[in-house]
Length: 394
Ligand SMILES: [Cu+2]
Image 1 (tube, protein in one colour):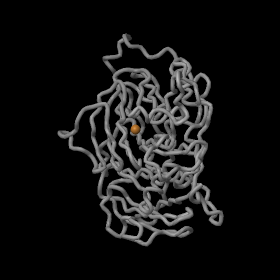
Image 2 (cartoon, rainbow, N blue to C red):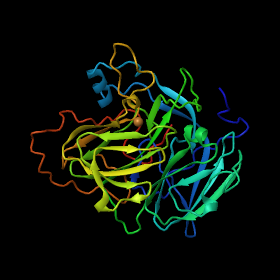
Image 3 (cartoon, protein in one colour):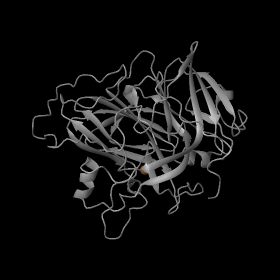
Image 4 (cartoon, rainbow, N blue to C red):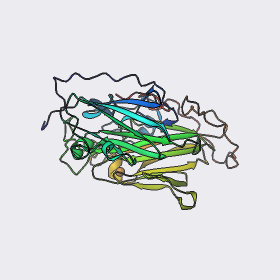
């Protein structure tokens, strides 16, 4: 180990209660939402930067689950029984850090405690904040030393998908995982969809048998969506006719990730600069997400079934253990699946907040010629729940 992962003299705060007054609109699989307290008119959030042990890969998929059946059918089970436990850095016990959601116009205070073994600072990526709140350690503020607490406060006037991440010793600290979503909804209630899903893309390099990130590397060998590699990523659910938004953000050190979804034509509706005017949105089903960039896409499934979503750099959809001569590699890395029910079938609620999914709309294309699979999968991956922002990370 080339550097300390944690300072044993710094006691780690257990994750604070995360069931505060989050808006509950966005689903970030494997990553909790961050609750807040009100101080007058200010929403007060608490983030603790700290060492986190996380399973990028939980181990074999649950017997009979969609992942299990898929991989057995293609004869690709090699390495699936090996969990990947790593020692990385995150916030409040989670990597990525918990998802912050706000309403345009909110005054926000974020109290950051540093339990890392080195100084840090937090940058609000894409947000037009006063310079002294921009979080560039050493440039716009003193670095937050180990054990110290630092408070940011600003008013959010933009709308869209943003991020927070370390802005001190960045290649190492962002490479160790220090980032999360900062999502701002319009104050007029517009831009609502039935399923609003945020997925943070990260890449990592681990030397064989090593649980610490090789932060000097430019050659990542593990790839995660919200801190999980397939086949430990969630099986997302939706129904034909529902409106879906995916918010992709990339905190990788090196690589862009062209994310592709089978079976749909989406419109790219937002970037790290916020919503794209309707006249300038473009169609597609693969969207390249550069480091530091955000892409929102919106679509509606027209056909039920199991729809495959993955990075189309195919090195990024295998895990480092997988390459074996003369064997079929299991699908890993940046891969998620959608289990899409027919219109009218009861799908798992996207979330329990005030914004309940709309009633499924009739769908003319569902005429029985492309029936739903005989055995809809309700078991998810067998590791954690799907579809709830409150699902805790490891
Ligand atoms: Cu990729």
